[in-house]
Length: 426
Image 1 (cartoon, rainbow, N blue to C red):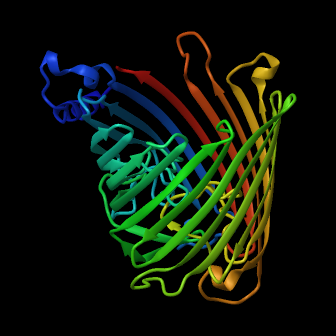
Image 2: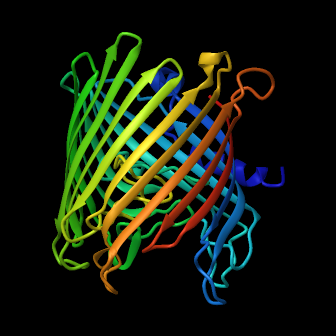
Image 3: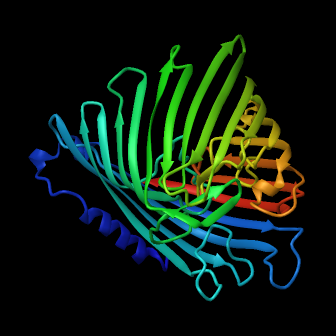
């Protein structure tokens, strides 16, 4: 309760951004407005079991409370509609300490301690004509070349412009330009940092990410073909081709997700030459509450997979702990999920996943050092439950346990406990 005034300030700031409308001019702007508040309680513990010594951090362990206030207006009446979206974020430290920071939940101060709290407000103006929409301001794109990765306390965002058009049935086109990012555990915005595989390249920053592409759904929307281009200016550019398909077959549903990336250096080549091609395939079979996945992923070229820090990518074998996207890596995945609603327990789900990679060019991945074949594996266990009725209806609980081992990067033992609850305000 002690932080309610700060949340009220965020709500007031959002309200101040709304246009002044008379009752006669409300139209869909007010009628289609939605607002929600999500409370997220997040415990994160990651042990780097093979790191020892007084000058190396061997553990990241923090506990924090987050609040996410989402506001989305409708559009004003007329052929050209105007609207505004806003997001208010507040993160509060519950437990941390020197030597346990850098979990991705909280900012780290100059004194090496986590900040007690942090907050930010993002506002987006939007214009719609027919089935084409232009947004300017705070954005959360979710693209094959820049995936949205809400995997910590608060979601990240970008600042820029995005154009989306769905004038042709089944075809969605997008293009945009981003000039800064607000990281998942930072209050402000800054330039974008490149990553190669699992390593941030902090000496290579850019104030421009450009993208364009589209998705075409066909075959009664059971199939989707995608083509995308992304450019982190002066660092790398990347192309993507993808195909997704879902096929009912009696009591079964079969699925396939295939993708191919090709990346190279761009402009001033702030990271030097970049050469990466990535292929992934993820096949699935669902029957009742059971779903089984089988995945294969391969990296080609001289470098690891490039991306914008600290995003995950929609690679088939990438998970939030290991990426299996190192130079020349080949990896296999087997995964099993079960939805307990098939047994009369709706809201309860569980899954286990195992991924194994080898053939890693460790010298190229780490950009130096001895040359040898890198190997890694990861086992994930996830259990989630959403309360279905009663006073706590909608409360979600998720537990995640990870064991990850490698001969060229840090071993990891990880646990996460996450509580989510949302209120619809409008």
